[in-house]
Length: 181
Image 1: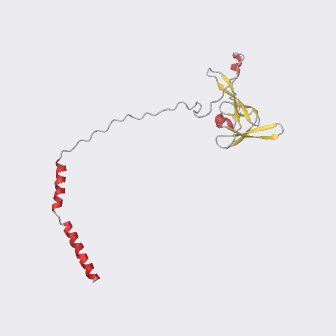
Image 2: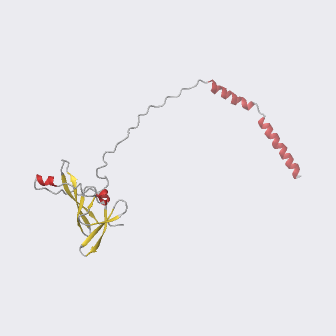
Image 3: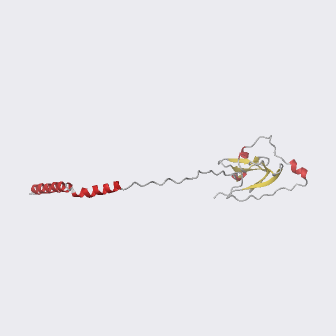
């Protein structure tokens, strides 16, 4: 009995499939629609808009202070006479020290170390993660900065910078001890 039901179900399914595929009237509507679309005149495509060529921007403030860093407290040393102003100039013949390859803003004081009783050295972290010891007389920063004093909280530096008129000025700076969080 189960086999008879399966055979009957199979015959009905095959008859339904054959009957569904034999309808010719349904294709006439599709053929009429395709003929109507092909008979319509072809449209024109609008030309693409003309674009202006890209003009690159040259950033010209690379040598200026970074806009998000704290302003530097600049105190210029006053000169008594015009002759003293021209006596200040960097020594271009002395060998450069390693820390002179970094901007003074990139250097951080991270501590001090005392090798002898009155011999205090400052520890300076460079921009590449290295720690270096400095004492008065060493140079650091790109503006010919000479270390003048080291104490437990800061390093005092005198930089020699151009004055804009062909001469040089001494500018005091200091690196304060950085507290790491």
